[in-house]
Image (tube, rainbow, N blue to C red; front, side, top):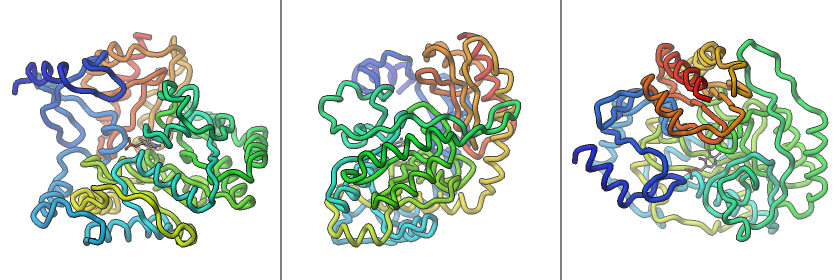
Length: 421
Ligand SMILES: *Cc1c(COP(=O)(O)O)cnc(C)c1O
């Protein structure tokens, strides 16, 4: 099919994320992707500043991940996980348990499902049904996950009437990460710590769990908050016998400069969700992990997707974690952080720019007004870069495999885009 035919059929039949059919915003045909570059139908090459939504940390078409998939295909692409098991799943579970200190692993088929499973675990564990979270969060698009997303800024207001009402503490101050110019972190905010404490204490006897994205609120607004708030939530959860769920689906596997967001706070959650970068961006796979104490009290967990523990996805995830262990990701992410700070500095104080912030391999320009997505995309594509702005955010979370030159291209494109605000 030529690119025009792909686009014609796409317009006729296909839903894209958060759009109608046909999509209201332009859609571009991708022919292939290699390293940190995607090649469009018209031959243009773009540096992927999004890592396919946090996932493709090693870059595309990676020989090691390709080989893991091919080798696994020769054995089996899939078998059911009910009553059967296999090396790729067991290896991956053992590996994740070793990385997190959480011994019991449920292999789910997407991040949202991993969050559903985490909530089921907490409900089955406690016999309670209320959850507490903070405003400004994002935990996925399925119903239980939607119910803990930000109730105002979220993408789910159409469903409010169908969602259980949980407890929302105020949005954390965004007082973590770095800003060009190197202003010191202000936090933690004692007033906010008191608000968190009050929210938990007011509802403690009906809470099954507290669920948060550690340190970085991703799709809810790309905000970074001080790890002291996470430590306080851990203390409060312990004090009141409530479980703490860390949704590390975006923050996991080095993105924030630590292996997991919780590592900034030096805490361990009772339940953790991982996804996105788990397979290095190759296929959908997520996991919900919990302590043996939690698992023992739950007993039979009532969940079991058809493609649970998919061997192909588990084999690629195993290879992706091998690669992560081998690559100097900590140095790479630190270098990207420095390059983002330097490269985004010219956006500070530009007309229409409210804030510029960086944490690990995440760089954000927050604008005063919602951006014109198509217009911003045109500009960054002219600079040879792929980004997907939303709301008041022009942001990047590039593959760790990006060179300093790649990062400079991305930040240059972002700064150029602010001229259109
Ligand atoms: C993306 C994301 C999810 C949902 O994952 P899907 O694989 O898209 O279902 C949940 N929580 C967080 C923090 C995420 O970033």
